[in-house]
Amino acid sequence: MDMNYKRKHIRIIRIFIFSFCFLSCKSQAISVEQNAMTLGVKLVAHTPEPSKYFDDLIHPCVRYISTGIAGHKWWMVGTPYRGGDTSIENPILYYGDSIVEVPQKWTATGIVEDTPKTGYNSDPCLYFDGSKLWIFWRENGTPDCAKNGYSRATFGKYTSDGVTYSPKKLFAGEKSGTVDSEMCPIVVNLGGHVRLFGCHHEFSPDRIPLGLSVWDLENNDLENKQFVKAIDVLPIYKVGFDFWHFDLFDYEGKHYCVVTPESANEILLGRSDDGINFKFWNTPLISTKVTGRSYLYKPTALVHNGVFYLWYPVAELGVSPRTSRIWMSKIKFSDLIRILETQDALIIAN
Image 1 (cartoon, helix red, strand yellow):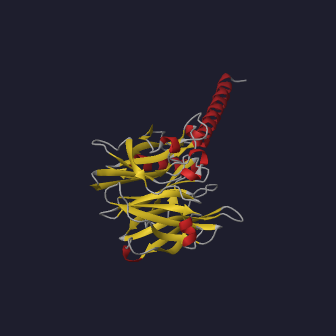
Image 2 (image 1 turned 90 degrees about the horizontal axis):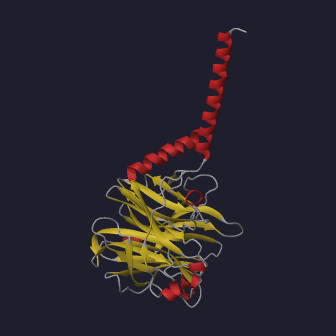
Image 3 (image 1 turned 180 degrees about the horizontal axis):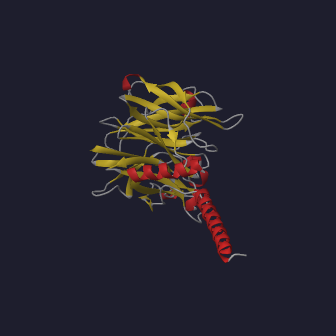
């Protein structure tokens, strides 16, 4: 056989083997799940009554108030939930102070609503109306729910000093015990209208995520009016994900949403032009699969000075019963969007 012919065929075989290995490695690299962000830093946020709450904290809601209130610009609310104990799932208000960056140490001002005689509290959020800081939360099977004819309901109080609160007020309610459309209530100002967004979920006969429900408020009057359900919408997200606990924020004319599934094993980011219809990137911001950490139960996020900040609970390692601490990750927001767009393009292409 001609020597040049042999060399030519050997070269072709080598190219084929190299190409196969390259494509195989590329395929494997793409198939391995990636996160857009890395696990951040654990915050210091001690709870009052440590013998009752054990510094456990989940379901954070963080808000930055540029003008400040009660001398502080950073505020957070969260609930203890150690070992799944609903009796301690009470909203606790915190403030944080930092001259240079976002605070990593938070100080509790007190319990916003204590343990009810029956049922339990859950799902707090914050809203600043320009002069008062409102704290909202859900009540489930409590005496105040029953008194108003509801199975579950959203209540709220406001504070001007972070220490004393207005009387509790009913804002929305659910009569059904099988469907809920105000779970994880988030109150925002959307285009000059104060609205409540809630996770819409069916619990029986099957657990089915139904998307988001949007509630309107007449004249933006938080002190005298209640929210009235307006529409249901279906966010667009990857197959197998169930929309559960979430938060909303705005940045440069766009609206964004961070959300976890009920399993709390990943956090997704979505974007909307109108603030109502959201489409989510497939690539998680943070996930259990990549970080090895679990129980990321409800994120909260915002963009401050061009940097995206994400707060989320993380279960402590080797601790029983399960106890969680709030962590914070950050990344330049333009970099985050570029990473999400690039990674999702690879996922779609393959």
